[in-house]
Length: 127
Image (tube, rainbow, N blue to C red):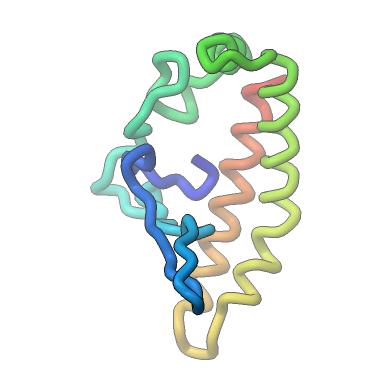
């Protein structure tokens, strides 16, 4: 959601085989930001309490989502805020770490700004 990826992530995962044969879930996979491309829909592939876009989300939706998942609404709202704050703080540094001279530096900076903007908007939905 913070990256703006409208892909269906419930079915989207990858496995890694470590040296020695151990198989683990990949920590990062399919990090495309579809909202960066105007021709793609900003709608979530999977809704949150019936809401399909970041603009539609409200605090009550997070409470409904939490209850449907068997979690306490205050916990879910607090965790959303924490993740938004972390993403806002780290987006620029992560973009710098990933940038290679001549290979998408400008796009990474733009993506970091997009993540910061979406994190701010998302954090407002849980207040």
